[in-house]
Length: 148
Figure (spheres, rainbow, N blue to C red):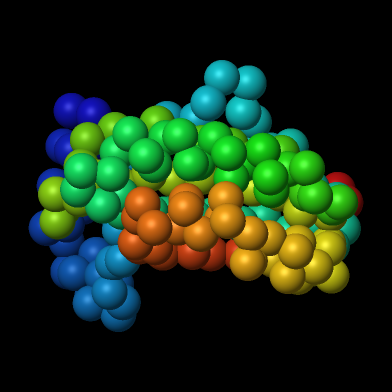
């Protein structure tokens, strides 16, 4: 982390970085450590696969409920047809706003299966209980266009 902070500080002093960072609004900015066995080079490599990256700000006082309901939600999610692996990352430090940020990634076989899964789990009690423990800070979806 010390190296990252030193490099970031030096980078942020450049006019190029300042100009770039003025073009968008950070929703969350944290460093993460991947779970054991995670290899980004092998995630969502098949043509048409969807990679979801979810960044969540856990509500104060809901940390225990978040952990419990996340486990139940991930079990529900990964039991659905078309859901692949789901990964939870260790967040190193806090974001600049001091929020308790968590980051997870889930892989889906296709856009169609992803949409069907959302329809299947959206009204589920497990989903509702989980989503009451955090505020979404950011979500990003990537569609694989190659199987190389």
